[in-house]
Length: 78
Length: 146
Image (cartoon, rainbow over all chains, first blue to last red):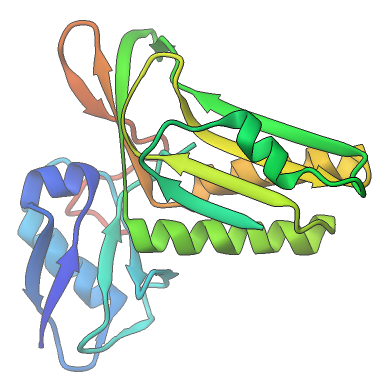
């Protein structure tokens, strides 16, 4: 399936505010991350976490069509 | 309890008023401000940006955790986004509680969890004209494992 992934901070600067990646129909967070990392090529970007529907998700968590998926680079609020 | 991502100048006195109660024996106010020097570099300002809906939801969860742990719902947090200059407040946390110890502990809990979990990013502007994302927990680069 085609999945739109939201990007922020240094990732957004490098690749734009979102990217569309192709992942298996039964996909995990790990699949999505690998697909976006492949898009980043050799760019030096900080390792992100992944959020699915506004919650941090583990690498083995499922991702379904229609989920809102975002890469979360190291946060620096406060 | 109220948490919000905002784009206006923060008002410490108003937030302190908001949590105040005659049942409270202590109110604490935390004001995070833009500092002149970071990692030895001269800072002139900071751009704050966020993944809005998730930042709102994560701050709400943290405040709910604080309410459960410390026994007060008198918690208000506002985090500001946009371009801030030196000395401006980026975050304000106000907590009120019948006793001072949990009021202080709740506030420490809130700021530490917010810094760890809420998807907000800052890009510092330096005196030499350059700008850089601040990535406190940055480790491996893209292409590596997560």
